[in-house]
Amino acid sequence: MAVKLGLILLLFLLAVALTLGVGVQGLSWQAVRGAMGGYDPNDPLQVVLAEIRLPRLAAGLIAGGALGVAGSVMQALTRNPLADPGLLGVDAGAAFAVVLGALYLGQSDAGILAALAFPGAALAAMAVFLLGGGLSGEPGPIRLTLAGLAMSALLLSLVNGLILLRGDALEVFRFWIAGTLALGLQKPLLALAGVSLVGWWLALWIAPLLETLALGRGLARGLGTSPLKVQGAALLAITLLTGSAVAIAGPIAFLGLIVPPLARRLAGRNLRHELLAAPFIGASVLLFADALGRMILAPAEVRVGVMTAILGGPVFVWIARSLRLGEVR
Amino acid sequence: MTSSALQAQGLGLGYGARRVIDGLDMDLPAGKVTAILGPNGCGKSTLLHAMARLIPLQAGHILLEGQDMARMAPKTLARRLAILPQAPLVPPGILVADLVRRGRAPWRGLLEPWNAAHAQVCDQALAAVGLTDLAQEPLESLSGGQRQRAWIALVLAQATPVLLLDEPTTWLDLPHQMEILGLLRRLNRDNGTTVISVLHDLNLAARFSDHLILLGPRGLVAAGAPDAVITETHLLEAFALAARVLPDPVSGTPMVCPL
Image (tube, rainbow over all chains, first blue to last red; front, side):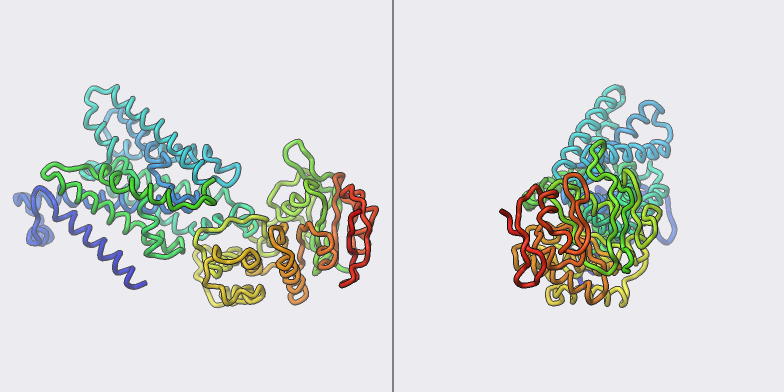
């Protein structure tokens, strides 16, 4: 157990160091220490650190952590190892709401635009859950995944349609097609960090109820759990977490899919332990993917949303293939 | 005079406009083993689900130890009555011990740490079903009979005076059916637990139960001791089955020989 905890922590610290150190401008420990001693706006290295790298790190920590937890909650709620906020259309819902807001309210207030991600994510999460058979019975992995893919495709094509209505659309379009951590400084990071912490806390709190629900509705109710309340709380947690991540970094594919199996392997089958490990693993994976994306085409960068898609595609296939027939309904 | 664990008064159950059970009155004795019998589709499982408040009542009341069940808080009910549905879902990779721990849910606060008292209840439940040695095995690696015993251990860990089971012997071969029914009989004898199950096998039900409820297509046919319920006229009415009823040469309880 201690070894696994150490491993999680080591990878996490490595990811943080890599994020601060890698880039067009190499960064030394002297610069980092200098910045800690007192910020000198005339030192270009310190400016890079304060205005590019640290916001990037914060964006990665929040978005990666939030998506990792959201993925774990989603997989527990749907009992579906293929569940992921991206695959199930939740981040497409958030993206749609933000783009719609940007179009009609103008790009004036970053805070308002970020806040729009939450109702968008909530509506998409609820719609997919209902379409996937969440109320009528036990939603099976296949039905839910199909509902999510359909919702995702619909919302993303709406996003594209909206963006094409704008003249100056290219930058917006690029952001909403594949997420990036580069725009952290423009986002209300502190508020979004707070919202994701609330989402994380809620997820940790209801974890035992989700475990009870995983025994099936009948037995769960027999054990004194109200399935509807638990599902509602879980959807709220997913919404808070995915909304924060999307507001900061745009859509990031597959992260919520990659993190939960890793967290289960490292933290064990107790959902609360898994949820404690998930944000650290999520942030590590996202920061590694981001650093990799900045290294392979340097000085240009491959967006982290593209990197996670490249990494996550094979993981999706691997999980789908390892599902036994009995689990596929 | 024995007291009642569960009472139904003017019970109406169904799905939408389709009534499955109408105007049912019945009394299930406390501290006894009761089996609910009847043909497929007569509403046995529906009745059991209603007694665990898994489905809404269309009419009437159900009293648990004299109190109207409709007004109980979910956790209160879960501390007094447990139900094992027919096909609970198996969380992938779960260990037997972890499955049984989930039975403590109604007795634990959400942030309350696991403690020795809970662990002791779970150990006792595992011992009662004879799975102590397999506690650290994945549920999926167990045989059908062992798996069913693991689920029973879960509801035992719930530590309720009343235990409902929906067809606990379906899918099991005859020796394993005997094993499960014997286990339930022993739990009743050792702990005084009221055991109520839906069963299909009339002969085994008569052998292992104190009290039988026989349902037919038009509602309750008979209720009472096995001798009084398993009769040729009742079988004809409930199942449209012509049969002779003889005393079981082993136990002396009624035994059905279809004609």
